[in-house]
Amino acid sequence: MGYIREPENIDLMVAPSTFTVQDRLIISTIIANYKIKSIKSKAKK
Image 1 (cartoon, helix red, strand yellow):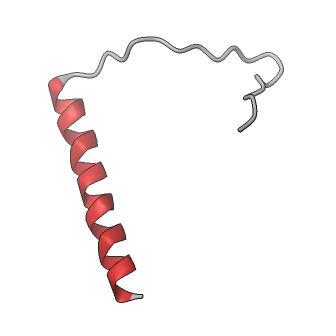
Image 2 (tube, one colour; image 1 turned 90 degrees about the horizontal axis):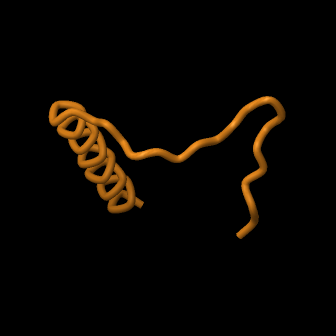
């Protein structure tokens, strides 16, 4: 695994997330749907 290089003139910063409850629910729903679809596609193979 290598290092991530910052592009020129761009600063990458890691900060605490400030998601609302609604944002967290939307994100978790998207992740759950993705996992279901990936399991189904693996089962078809």
